[in-house]
Length: 210
Image (cartoon, rainbow, N blue to C red; front, side, top):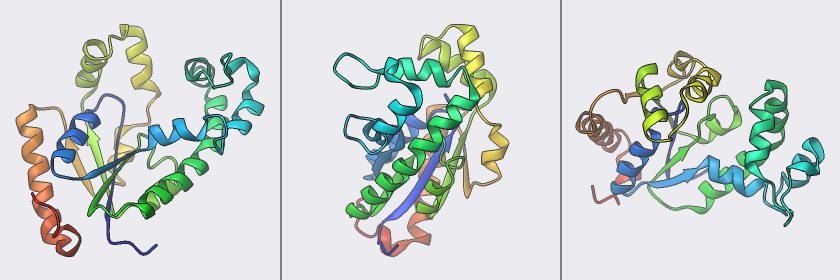
């Protein structure tokens, strides 16, 4: 696919701090494409995955206005790996197509495609020039879920345990960002990576101010 944008795939398990990284990259004039938001769009009424999801999981997941209640759907799929697999088989190809179009329509020098299942979804990673994986220790993830998302301890442990091993992502990464330290340390890592991008991809990044 011909393009001038540099597309970075950013992924990592739950509560590794991807949002903090995205906020800093926005300050550096990167454009963010959030695969989770694309996922919301594909299951909206009239969206490319709406009918198939309703057919697969029944009208019990619908609100009165016909929209899919994502909390109800989430309770179903996160309690049964087979149902989660069925849902992902339906929505991932549609998210891929939408993400591909979003990238094609965008003329930003740097696009960050953020997706928690960037690597597991298969096709999504083919849209990227580089894959960045964010890592954190179990203790840090657990603390963030308790403090920032106000989860119960049992739910927090379950959510972390549901994630694939971080090592599986790291093995496929072009760059690994360790987010176990301070905000200052994280920003220093990102600044170094950004400077390296400017050296490696000078043509694509010449229009960036930072």
